[in-house]
Image 1 (cartoon, rainbow over the protein chains, first blue to last red):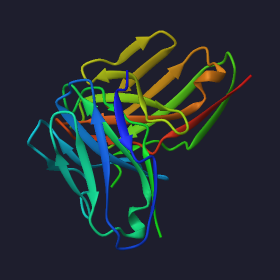
Image 2: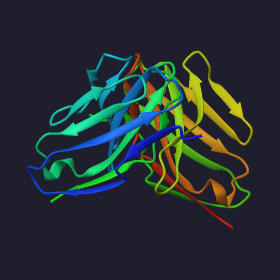
Image 3: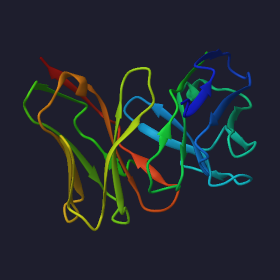
Length: 113
Length: 111
């Protein structure tokens, strides 16, 4: 039972490089999310997708783009990475959206030099 | 601005004793509160939740208390076990797709 799968688990980038974090869930959930976790800040919502075909900005969307490819997959793209984007990124899904329980992936640790 | 605050970065308790983790919030529109548990190198996992219409919710060794007038919630773990050692995140939401998290409290349960 895979749940929420994120790739890659680790990535090191140079400033200005681009990359895409991939996320897939096999629980048939409608809503999917991307969070970042920074020391002393907790988890902050970057973007979310309430359903296939829709995406919306969260608390900290600047510097990121997302694509909800289908019901299963939700990707996060950094077009021009900056050191401030060094963080641990978590993808999550939810059958309800918002007030309900979130199911998280294992996280992707990104370092931007 | 952090709307959900966990002011204790860490907590250490003895096995078998009670662990009390605290959380404060500032947004009076929050109506649903959750606790997540996170082990190293894993994603957070849901632990327990409470709606704003209740003041207590219990699930086995875990109880969450909500004090709306004080904008405060707490998680009680009784009895604490070494396997409970993890980072605990408090979360709150006011609307669909807007869940806010605290910075987390690292709980260490000593044998």
